[in-house]
Image (cartoon, rainbow, N blue to C red; front, side):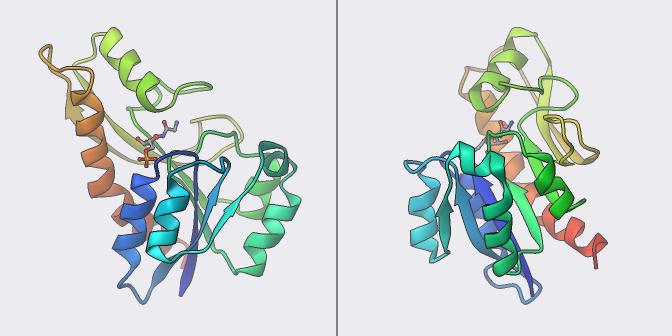
Length: 190
Ligand code: GAR
């Protein structure tokens, strides 16, 4: 059984969706949820899902060593960043080489980089007059949003779309694709 840890900073709807996807699997399971904000709603979801959670401060996350130790103690094989807003320090990348995946709510390399997360990304897409957006699932490198892309899916952006329409379409792609793409990446590591 492969053990997945999900790192999230906010609502955690992707975390819940991924946990439910693997709930019946004998291949992989979400065994830990890590939040960097004690008020993140993802912690409520973890409770409801009966999944262990840990909260870390930004300083603890950046120092890395103690969290890496906690992950190793729990035999975590793979890390999923699902709405996680801190830059992953080099020590994590060395501890989990090729085993950290992120989802970005746009078509990288457009609208990525420091400070580009959540609604800010969707706003940038609309302001740029883009006719499509989508999701990018990529492995993590030292720079924000720069690791090799594993998967993209697109959605149309229409001139009639309200500011809520774009995130709704993007979230739908995330829910549909992120879990099976994680499973595919896990299989490449077998
Ligand atoms: C998701 O749309 C994810 O792609 C985005 O945050 C949202 C989290 O939603 N991630 C980023 O913007 C990272 N740069 P959720 O907490 O409901 O899963």
